[in-house]
Length: 116
Image (cartoon, rainbow, N blue to C red):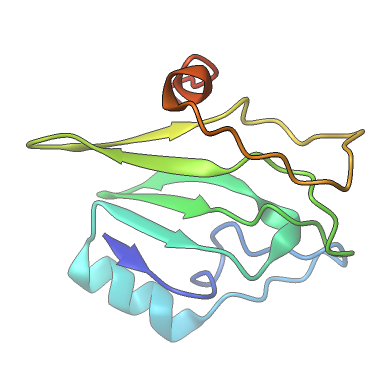
């Protein structure tokens, strides 16, 4: 698994101005290393997941370009011998309270997961 602040060029890196802001050098390095997962944020507007070649790319930005909470958290669940990505609804939240709510009961959270 590779975790970086920003995305590689051309992968979940598009801004609200339709400009690609990812790093070209990072893209080349990711293709060399071929991690199973590459998780990043920074480009808040292009939240989501994309499988390409051997890697699943995850833009896990939960805030929009105005720093308002609009996206669900992406949760990586590690099992004994494998890692599977799970995500809450996977859709952008349109109307959300500015108050973050944390659920302490793990079972309540896991019922809301879907596999991408």
